[in-house]
Length: 85
Figure 1 (tube, rainbow, N blue to C red):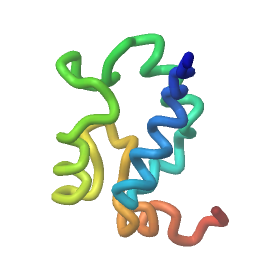
Figure 2: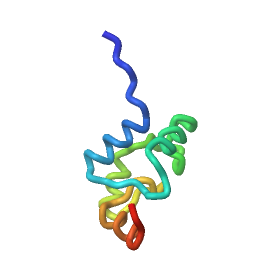
Figure 3: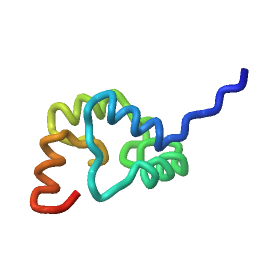
Figure 4: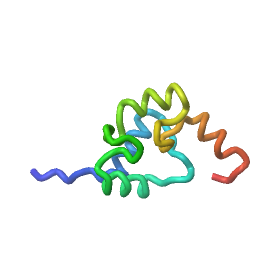
């Protein structure tokens, strides 16, 4: 049986859903997935693969990950306050 690789954008969506994260409203899963595929790593830290466990700690502690892609529900609400989403 041949398994197809999950696209990076799908992997990012699944990660966000699993941890109840939002993404920065300035980006999309598709855009970020293509960026990560092109770089082969986190765009902000050469030592990280995205998504990573450190992002979970950062979002839970600071409301966003290092790259500002994954954000908490509270941070999402703050950033989108007064805008149609």
